[in-house]
Length: 526
Image (tube, rainbow, N blue to C red):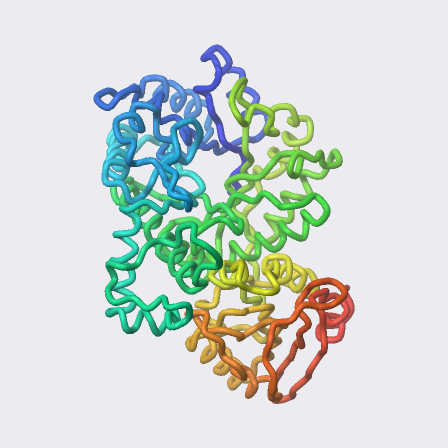
């Protein structure tokens, strides 16, 4: 079965509208809706009271109509009573300013009060709705990604660093703290990378993102532990997100992504990349056949720019042909008020979406078999963002351009994925390479695989220490001078790409517009 539907927020509309919603859903082939994502203040109007009766009625209506529910825990948006009682649970930004209530994502995951309240509402939902036949999937939180720099996070960061490095000497070596007199005598001297006078230590910044990914994961796992059945959370993508999704994929029962392309100009290529990446995460995490779900995408538009009528079917096919188990939208019906009242919704587009939904009724998820892998690493994405770099390369854009030039089924995989079963592995701009990654690539080549190494790869290790010549044995070349310079014409790195395959070395000079060079390596598009 293919899931088809979207986020449904009945609490944002009068109850008299609900029967009409259900009727429209049935006629449109909707078979799954996400409910309750931002309903904490309705479900728990005070610290001592809960109101589930309205949700009981919603679930009953959906069940009677044969529509499944992805029931969310509403912890991405704490209610005003909570933030008033626990102002120290609000996030603190880099400048040391504690934010106030008035939007979504107003929380710090390091706050004990917030964590306790989150687990409490999750447990209450689980107790009331365990075994409810309408529920097909549990949806924890929403789009994890809120970063905080408060003192509680500082304490958690120091514990994380002790576990990672053991002692300050190892930390100093990893972070290169001899530079600018930054050597630490104890872990207690370490703070989060808050606002400072000039450029901060890039290794410090990278480790804080790693720490925060783990801190957010702990919050997810605490809720997951009290929920019955299949559990997931929706991965949001973007440079600002401090989440290592490939690692998180091991802790969800179904990889689910929210896909909002950055531009309408190349949105189909972006969707194809995201789909192959979600499947790659799922496959690397051991999920059968790399199954995954697009939990949210924008109906009929990209970044408030309208798509041509009839595009929805092609977008759905971009996901489904790459192994998606469902096509879900944000949102079913736009709210009458609030900051997203003008966000596109399904109801105004049902003339286009309903035939699509009905056509999926007898369809099953596709199984994708790929002999080509493209390595994409979110830690590398974070590393490329460091302001100390003379060239802040758009890592996602570069890897996506390589992906678009491969003209064949491709698994976009993390650096931790097994490369067994692939005949071709492409590694674009993998700036950060650990010793484990180096070993995996060498083992792949030694086994007869063809490896294509893109510009900007292998320049630093996992601690962002430079590694001159680290790929010389693979490329069959020697670098006598290592630098990162900007092109005088377009401001992008002036670099060289090397390709190594099955014992034959090929060297291709390139800029970062890879299309012509891809033809040399992979042939003309079909």
